[in-house]
Image (tube, rainbow, N blue to C red; front, side):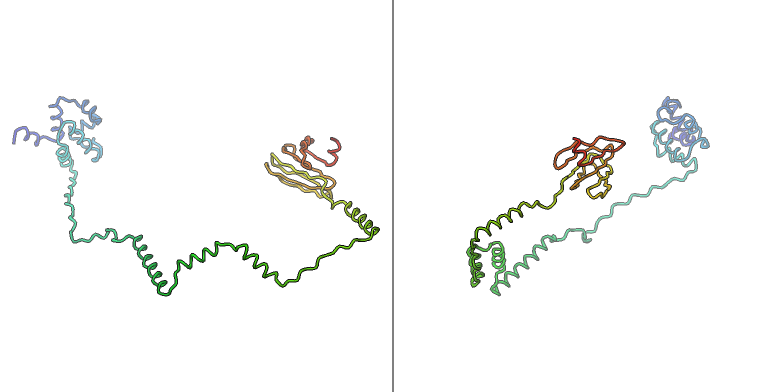
Length: 290
């Protein structure tokens, strides 16, 4: 053993690190700049002052960084640090060699010899083969039977068959006697003509005189009164179209902010002017004012 190695072993860990730093001509400030470790901690490392050092986990990192900077063996430095500080050395578990797979062990993950689709195809093929054999043995061809059935459903009844059926249905039915019109005497015919003219002159049943239709651009609530005085409050929505029928009169009250299109008997009429917070329409009074 050389004298230098003997001195390194007898010297403390901090003295050994300080000696290596001084041999490389580095100051504590330069080591602090390279390792980013504070000079106070570096001084504690070189003085073996463990009371001024942080926790063991941080110290091991500092000793490793210091050793790498000085190009020393980090594991040897950490071993000496743990021995000097009384920290138990963690034993590394030996790496176990990989277990060789036995050649006799069956591989249960191997895919099946036949896929499900192949098995299903084989089953269907066997069923089809059995049906064909049964049809040949019994003298019945399922393909021919299905083809004739489909053709019968698709083929409509011909015109000749329809005519023959109609003739068979109407055969034996007695023909209805024809109605023979007998001319009436002149005075009676004239009287009947006058009565027909009076009947034709009778007006049709009462129809609505007013058809009011509104398509709203806004939403709100209106009030409408029809012929017999029945008043109804209706809520309307923007885009909605409402229609009312009346024989004599319609009175409509709308909110002032209401906008939209009004059709009276299919003809557009202007929206009533707003008065006292509402728009009122009276038919037929408003029509007479125009």
